[in-house]
Image 1 (cartoon, helix red, strand yellow):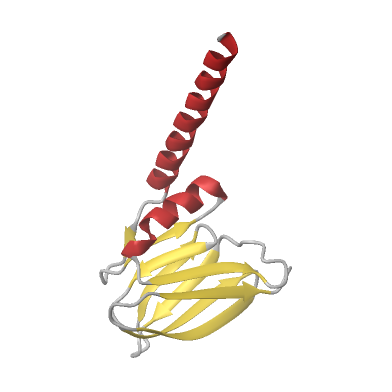
Image 2 (cartoon, one colour; image 1 turned 90 degrees about the vertical axis):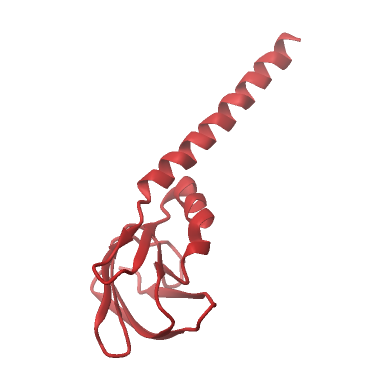
Length: 141
């Protein structure tokens, strides 16, 4: 009986710690808004932040992932510039983790990501009512 109580207590503590960790990660992932009204958030370092991003990713129609080519090792501190079809930057940010989520108006965009001196540029189309996911892979340093 004593052992069952101890195990129940340990399990309860682990569950509470998990909820506290996710809550802390969600508060660390503060959504940002550009002067032009683009909402975005970045992060995804560790399990708690990754889980927190998964919970909110439905609010964003552009989802970017940054990793090392070959190993798939995730990257942070990636400089990201998103330009609309007219060439105007609608988002300029440094991703705080391997994932950057943005809510952009439907249309065509040029996304430029820079990490460790390497730059990857992609043209992406974000259709109305759809989500676009894209991964950017950089050479190992």
